[in-house]
Amino acid sequence: MNPTQTHTSLKLTRRLRRLRHSETLRALVRETRLSPDMFVLPLFVCEGEGVRREVGSMPGVFNLSVDEAAKETERARAVGVKSVLLFGLPDHKDAVGSAAYDPEAPVQSAIRAIKRQLPDVLVMTDVCLCEYTDHGHCGLVIDDEIVNDATVDQLVRTAVSHAAAGADVIAPSDMMDGRVGAIRAALDERGFENRAIMAYSAKYCSAFYGPFRDAVASAPKFGDRRSHQMDPANAEEALREIELDIEEGADIVMVKPALPYLDVVSRAKERFGYPTAAYQVSGEYSMLKAAAMNGWIDERRAMIECLTAIRRAGADIIITYYAVDAARALA
Ligand code: PBG
Image (cartoon, rainbow, N blue to C red; front, top):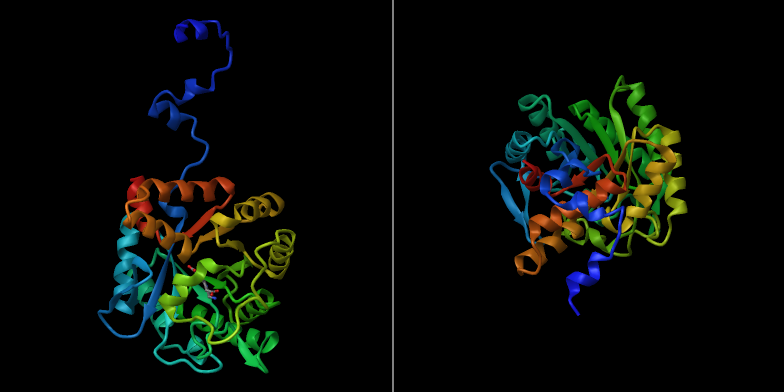
């Protein structure tokens, strides 16, 4: 049987392959686009000067002293990435995480340095205690319990100190109840009513944060984060978390991690129509890196495919360690 003959009998009016014929045509009908200005680059700021120490489990990601963090921000800015999200690595940790609101700590110093050198860059700051407590928990611990309300007081102090240093967007990632409202009220009281809050609203208790905890030495010394971070099995509850944060004054809501939770991103965007961020977390990054370094996947293609999927699901803002690489790939 001649295969060409068999197929000539097909009388198709709709042939979806037509629009896939050339790259120009594919670009013309492409539904989802990425642009560097939707990316946020996370930076891990440490003490010292001239420090640029690669994170073992995150090749291409560094612990940076304030001067180096400013340089990294400049490099990102040069390829169109205009937002950074700062995390701190203090030399000194204690039970209550007091370095979190020290005006001379790495994050506060980096905010001032970046704002001075690159005033048009948007500086976002992560607000949580886990990088600052000696036990590695996100809050104050009493009788092995992470207590909510006293922790919120510490988070408020931290948020206010970030705003005072010049942060544009405060991003609480702790998952305590009521923290968004408390931070909003404290910022307003001090004249920071124009500083925005990006709430880590639906933050899951995820195994994909492993490499991050290596980066900032924040793995809990005992127990885990299941009493405050969300159960990966729940989506309805994520919508309740997001709704509450919006009621409390969040300007941007976040789903985290990103790729394993695209259904949540999509439902959140559809339900609330709010500016929605998704965080492609450390484990998502490191998995791609590890596979690429073994020659098992094409890193550039896999990176763009994942970021496109996150955008397609409904994210307006993507927080990613790939921000600079992706911006370069899109250029
Ligand atoms: C702080 C915080 C974490 C991440 C962002 N903010 C870690 C955690 O909750 O343990 C994870 C980011 C990543 O994995 O890239 N609470």
